[in-house]
Amino acid sequence: MKVERIDHVAIRVKNMKEACKFFSDVFGMQFTELGEIKDVDARSSIDSLGVEVIEPLTPDGVTAKALERAGEGLSLLSLKVTNLDEAADEMKSRGIRQVGKMDGGGLRATIYHPKDTYGVMIELIEYKDKHPIVTA
Image (cartoon, rainbow, N blue to C red):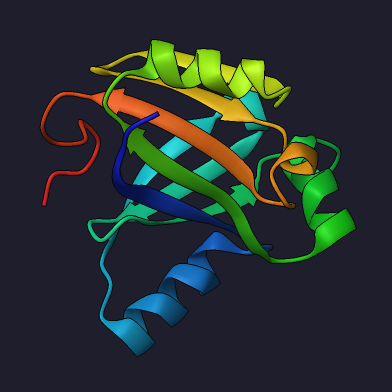
């Protein structure tokens, strides 16, 4: 599989507004709210550097359960690949379980179970030149 680069990292937090303020104050990051991500029951904001902050939408959803179990911290590592179909086939051949899939808005992605990838959810993502949700 050919990985072009790290696309973004997602950090799971209890309070997105406080976390965004922290990263803005300390590192000068400027976040754009992406809104709700229904598949993982989360709300999200992202910086143009590729730091995404996610918080639970509901107290008993997937993100809230992960937050309760593992605490705040790195949730997802997104890797931009040149060919998602080939990358997904390789992951499957290695027995790495796919837990999610996205297709639309100019990108395609597959997401893999953290128990198979050393405790970090891995997303493989494919899009043309520039990530369609980052404007800077």
